[in-house]
Length: 157
Image (cartoon, rainbow, N blue to C red; front, side, top):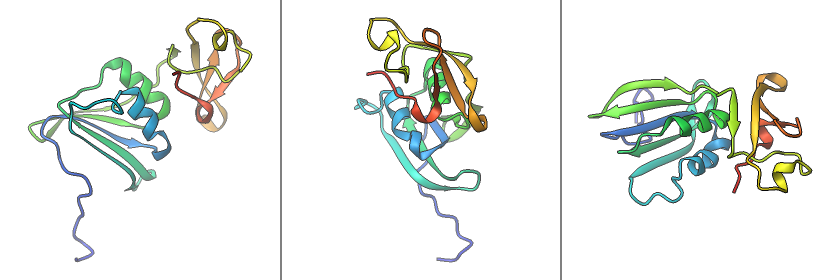
């Protein structure tokens, strides 16, 4: 094969969503956020450690006939703040959106402080999103004020 030939690693979809520029380490969290680990209805392609000029490597999710809700996109932004959500119709990209990290997060991330009341009582977690060291995202708990770095964020079960 000639060096100039392009290789298509992932097949195109007719209608649906492509979530691109996902850090490979965040892929499975995004799969869980969107419930794709339980989805038996939609055809999907999930790729990881794909070549990326901007990130070095990236992950990508393509889902036929499924479009994420704004709530899901807010959650995706926490773990993949540089992700792009592309809407596909008739094999063409009709909308390209860069995710935006919301100012507040409630209910789906655990507080990293084992002594926080949210880890011992039936209280919904709530965080203010702040910038952490080196510009990465961190969460400040509304109850104990502990900062949780992006690397330590865990989804609630």
